[in-house]
Length: 337
Image (cartoon, rainbow, N blue to C red):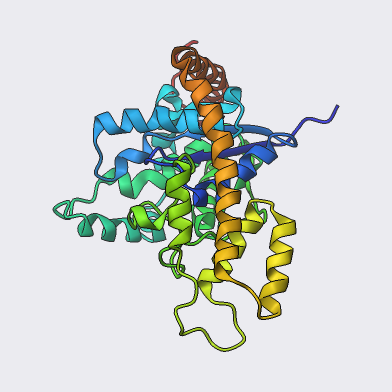
């Protein structure tokens, strides 16, 4: 039997999971599990690069784990980054194969540095924020991932991972690391229903994202108040707000409703209330399914947490083996394990 290709993808524990996260990444992760050998990381070291609360970080880490399982990710595929210290150790090795100039040119470093200043964090830019793409490279390469599901905005970081891997290979005189490839899949561009010119995001405030685990009343209220046509859309073009609602309906796989409402739109007979009701129904249906699963998980929290600690320990064995081989190749002493 042919060995399955390896996929690695990670997510930061930064609060509520919204439909932008779900349709943009998690739904795809669930589907990839049938075709590939998948490992999914909750990367809590990365969440420390911006101002944070230690208590909240711990709470958010476990909340994200439960959310991932509730939405369909297999528990045995999940690891928590801080339970696998080899990531941080490999990051140091990789620091020695990364130029300072490369890191300062990273788009997300510039964006998040500016965001830090806006948060009034006394303009404190941590070395971790500058260095986290190297840790990200360690996250990927330590499992020798063949593919990494990415969006266009993440391609720069994956390219850095390939550069680091190639430099290491050249230094040790061996094609040790696989150069990971991007895995592009059709990902819906989910926008804020309050301002469809910007993507759905927690950083923009509560009205700009819809929590996957919100109660039905709140979801319906947010969709009911969604911006549709602001009056400045060129004639003959669909407004961003209406387009976003159709995108949400399509992402929810309600293709029959999507087709009928699109027909109404093209015939000039679309009632926005009908479109909003269809979208709200679709999101509520998904949400209620996930809420029921999460309630089941919450009834046995200790067992779920132990399961994730165990899966992390099993996944860690791969990381330990890679790090041992890296240290041998790099001329470093090894600790037996």
